Length: 181
Image (cartoon, rainbow, N blue to C red; front, side, top):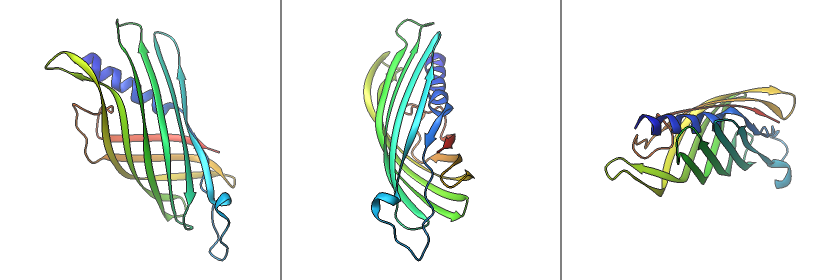
């Protein structure tokens, strides 16, 4: 059981190593830019090689609905292989829908629905099977701008329907730190 938890911990840690996305544009109240100008793109990318190999690609796209509210969608793909253990590899894929509300210029509330498919280990039967696992993540964050569009994003999220037996995360808290461009 400990190797399963450490596997999920490493998978989660690698998915949070590098996060790249485009910052949300500031929309002035007196103007309403076209949809193309309100769109933003980005995502996560992570690589690790050695006894433990991990790859993550998670693109996303969003749109500023108002000057304070944005929403979007993203995809996730992760590959994990630990050569220290025979047969310890996994792929994880899925998607997410998110919304963000700027309470103050650099402080925001974040809500997200995530659905991930991965090999879920059953301790009773000592077998693995692929399953879709859903998560409702809520929390907040802080954005440190570096210019007009770039900066650093710090998110602290809580999984409202966390289940220790069915989650790819080791705990209900999800912390994300990343750079945005």
